[in-house]
Amino acid sequence: MKVRNCMKRKVIYSQANISIREAAGIMTRNHIGTLPIVDDSMHLIGIVNMQGLIRLTMPDFIHLIENVDFVHDFGAVENEKVDPAILDLPVTSVMDEVVAVEESAGLVRAIALLQEHDMSDLPVLDLDGRLVGIASYVDIGVLLINTWATPA
Image 1 (cartoon, helix red, strand yellow):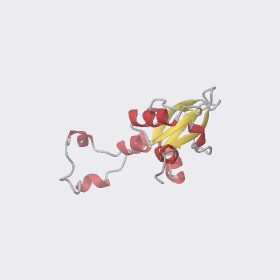
Image 2 (tube, helix red, strand yellow):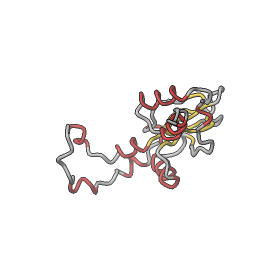
Image 3 (cartoon, one colour):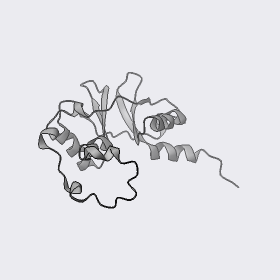
Image 4 (cartoon, one colour):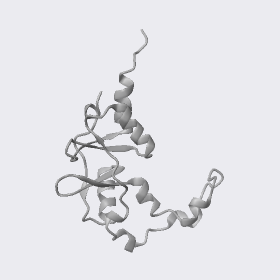
């Protein structure tokens, strides 16, 4: 089975000339966790993900805490707002590196990329490197599990 057999063909994407605020708006309106960023020819140039946007609101000290199990409420920190100047920065300032898979790739390769890069969605490219789909961990996993032999 190939990634093309499970990818979503309707992909919400944007070009790089938008702000972080605009990217966040696109993601929340469309309820998506990954926003591929493409050039005029639909070549993938970066990825914005929800985790990266959420990190904008996280206090600097949070990475110093080894175990947050004992912290049930961060108090006033919970209500912190992102500096509006940050939201007006170009989306390229929070883009992740390009990680994608060709539509002809096998499912195990796709799952391996998702695991290696700690992603939940994987952009899918054609042979010319143009964005043609997106496959989630669930999309790929469902197709992979459906190939398992079921007991009689």
